[in-house]
Length: 160
Image (cartoon, rainbow, N blue to C red; front, side):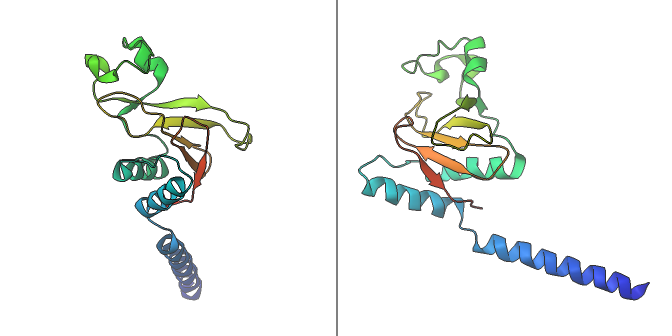
């Protein structure tokens, strides 16, 4: 019996080592966003302003399988009194104060149809939506950003 438990521990150690090694090779989300920003800028497109905030959102989706609590769907925001107009701040209403729009279904012909896609606002300022969005799926690790309201989509590599 003891040799079998030693084998199990050895297999577990190797598996844990492989996971740690793969994680160590994965870039941080901040590094990945900065790389995407460099690409966007080189193409004459607007970069993401708040790298830290987007990185936090990416990690939250990866770790918890959902957006941070500050996000509500546009349908939910409308039920709480938001008009749905991008010229109206979500922060002008007490029920939607400090909330961002996220979790709405998204479809685009350039994305794989094998999984459902969702979108979330990026770079919200004073409750006003920007043209920047994170596009993500809860059934995989693929993530995309757009800074021009879906005209151009840039893939983000998995990050930690």
